[in-house]
Length: 368
Image 1 (cartoon, one colour):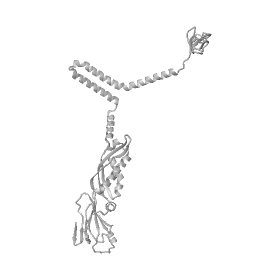
Image 2 (cartoon, rainbow, N blue to C red):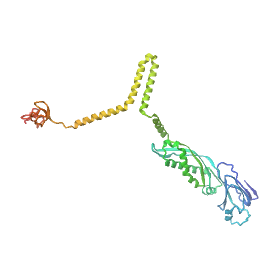
Image 3 (cartoon, one colour):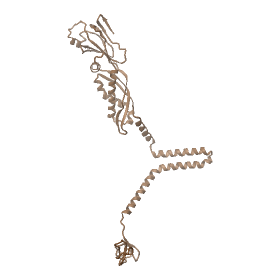
Image 4 (cartoon, one colour):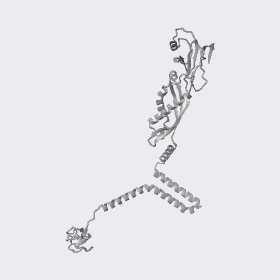
């Protein structure tokens, strides 16, 4: 990859034969020097960086260059060269790969927690793919790769995955999408995640070319609960479903009776019993709710009547000696015929009613 005349380097180029190298340091023999006028070749999807005494100097985009003080202004300034300087010089040369690194895999090593309006706290996992490339070679070299002889994707992938997964968790939390609908909102979550992590990638000199969420999975117990809820939604009206089930059972009973009896005429009683059972089951389920309501109303009315009877105070009455009409014990005249009521009293011992003028209680014999 370099042509030497003695210890003088005349051609500098890098033919990348790998799929995962991001930064490559051009091999410089210990005593080799770069000749003024040497050829520098930078291929498409490459950027070349010159370092002098550990400091970043000139950066070359794709192209073919003849090295001299005219196209190396920063290096000329660092080395204090005069115009037309022709002596060989020593310098570190790094190539940065700017192509897209595609089909990179990511996935959640541990479940991500989310708050769901239906199921409370829910854990979910996700996985997918992403592609990225170096957008700012100088920043990436300065902030990430450094002066390593070679820097590969494996050294960076864990960091990028962490940023991706963090962005997905934030996007799900901010979206407030129910757990039931996560799998139907993958495009929206992908778009929201891109917006959250672009700046973090940019801080390393990297551009996120694409990112896709292929799947979001929930714990098995949550998926079972979702299946039950979906089944209940498919049933619709529970009463109609119950009636349908009863009618279906009726048909099965009649069919079984037909098989066991062996003849149409012999099957009539069994079929009738099956029909009766089916209709009874249908009526029972269809009218079960109304019957429960009616029974509740009747019980409430009965309890109310009993309470009123218990609350009503009992009054002492006495019959009129003339017409027999019940009158209050304290009445002096009958409210029906107007006749004078016989005055009565009560025994102070037992409380029994005593006719007015009596000297002894007819119940306990106490003297009045």
